[in-house]
Amino acid sequence: MNTIYDMTESAILIAKLLRLTRDNKIEWAQKKSFGFPEMGQFQTTIDGDLEALVWSTNKEAGFRIFEKESPPRLSPPLGGFYTSNPDVPFVSAPLLPIPERDLVAISFDHENGAAQGEIYVNLISLLEVARRSSDKVEPKIDRVKQYLDQLAV
Image (cartoon, rainbow, N blue to C red; front, side, top):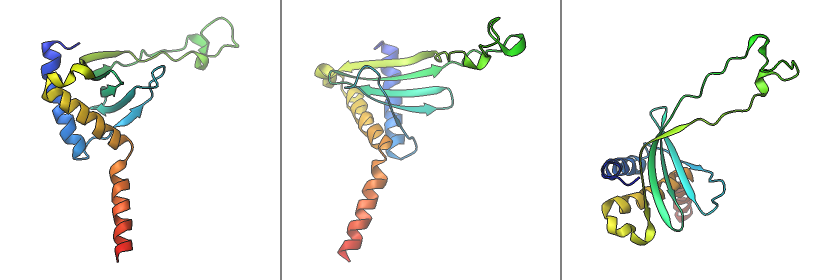
């Protein structure tokens, strides 16, 4: 994480995602962060199996692009059962998590983030516009404006 390659590519990707999100061309969804209630995470799908994730805690913020690998295809053994016990059908098998592979990943602590310059500023801006996108803030603001315009007449 934070290699020269990751920093260079992330700077480009963050700037593009920021611009496209501001233009309402990319929508973000808030992702639950189990075990880390103070963490805010926002995720969007890019081209099917690629995902972008931005996150922040009270100490640091980060960005990653990762690839979701296809889950293994399971086929039931003859008879549709995993074991010799016919009372355990194939459909009751536990779901396996889909593995992820990072393409680029960076993180900065907030204390020294400003020293990183434009990439940190863009990352924090992307976090804010991703939050606004996931909360559907813009349509709500437009609705308030329309309501206030109606009252002014």
